[in-house]
Image (cartoon, rainbow, N blue to C red; front, side, top):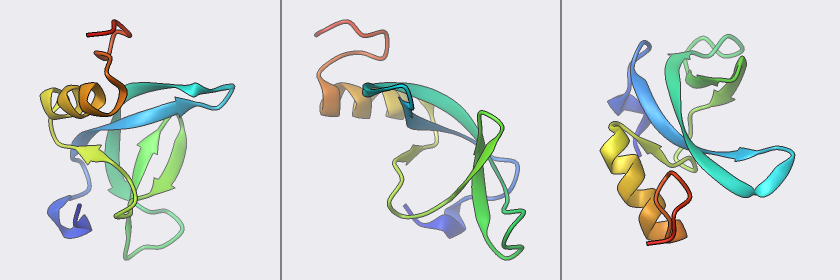
Length: 83
């Protein structure tokens, strides 16, 4: 992922791990925004929290791409059904 491919206002899809149950991941919608802590960088806004947008994050531009990756990595569809 290259950060310059995203602009503030873009809607993307990410894998989000439940902070209370680390072995559970879901696909969540996030917004690309200007990072309030670093004006020259972008961040993801998810669940009222800003996350720096980095190459270490799995970010997908469509829900279909996210679902395909979820199935590839976890063997389940995004609804938790083993395929």
